[in-house]
Length: 170
Image (cartoon, rainbow, N blue to C red; front, side, top):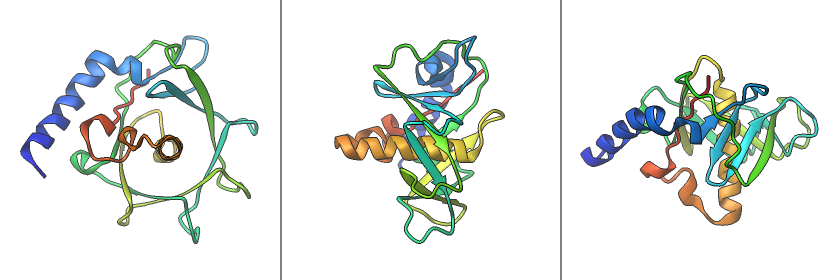
């Protein structure tokens, strides 16, 4: 990995939670539901069957839409979710809000994700006391799908500094 890439990533890890974590991930005082910002859109995890997106995480799926590898190396990850616990702003700056439900038994999910420690298309790093690896995978998958639909793959999975997201939540 190039030295400049590693230095940029480390600067992001230090600067983003301290300076701008509220613009990435937050909750309001009345709604503790996780909300992740990507571009102008916000994505909230939900338990409702009426969610905008249903994601099934199934490692045995014959043809998942997305294969993700859980990694312990921050520098190797395409998507980084770190919970620093000191964000209090709501996701009011987003122009649209979409809900994401994880349902391992969904018969017709919008996305099926295989998530494991084995080699995969995308690498995910998660360190959070509040969010599971499945939560991060579901958010990444929906953002990835929307980026593909709009043709803006710069948002996710490009291994560029702007594609690495650091999420925080109180």
